[in-house]
Length: 228
Image 1 (cartoon, one colour):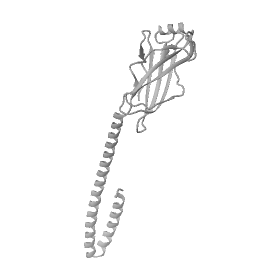
Image 2 (tube, one colour; image 1 turned 180 degrees about the vertical axis):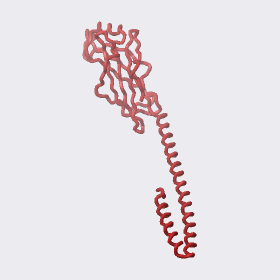
Image 3 (tube, helix red, strand yellow; image 1 turned 45 degrees about the vertical axis):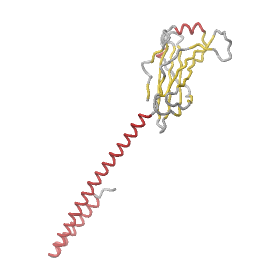
Image 4 (cartoon, one colour; image 1 turned 90 degrees about the vertical axis):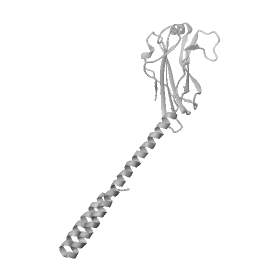
């Protein structure tokens, strides 16, 4: 619906000129002018009412659209998947390659971490990036900048399903050095990122970071843990 403002103004100007010409010609013209003026007044009143109705209809339409959008957004937020780690953060291990002898001096550091979907609907299009950092010089590994490699695809994750990923440090280390690392605070750290979508294509991201304590447990980093 378009606003009639411009048309009303042009019509009023034409009637004013027409009224003036009739009033100059004859008494009959005056009566005609009065009648025309009355028509103009009624037309103007009707146009004003129509304009008010148009504005009110537009306002109600916008309010209804906003309410529908808010309801839809709230529903999706409540039903969306929420991926986060489980309470079992695991612990670093020193593992040999698949073809290595049972007794070998060198090994690789690996750390399994579990995640699940705490939401109400499945998570799709998972892409998982992770990195394991090890400090062999006694420095605090939390202060290091860690870059991810190419993300790995993950399977769809229904609510409450558990899955896991192994973060590995692909540099050989002697087992006695690994034992020293396990007895050192802040020496081994895991950082990861999981991106995923919901049923409607909305995109989300989970970031996490935690490190090894000499007690054998793990602690989350002060930064880098988010669900977006």
